[in-house]
Image (cartoon, rainbow, N blue to C red; front, side, top):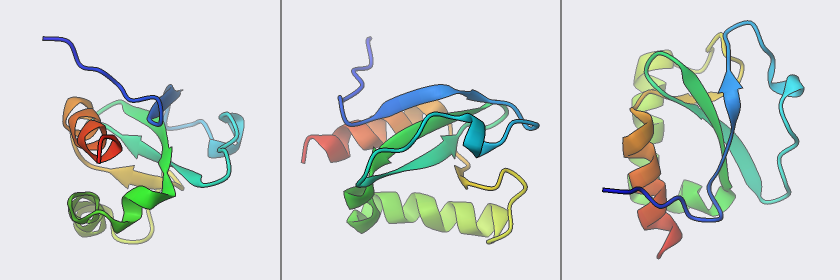
Length: 95
């Protein structure tokens, strides 16, 4: 079963613990970067409009519970598997 990634969801390169976000590609206006994954974090650039979606807000609550507001990655890190995140954002992109 293939997973389709919507055009608005773009995965950047993998981020190692010792890299900084400034070393990554720029984020276009109206988007923000999140880091997703359980062990190896991957960077995704997603639309700001996702912040209003209840299912995405659930992910943000999980991130707050796990990391609080001071996380060593320096960016918004979401503690879920990459395939779950892609599935969720695919459904958000179609709505």
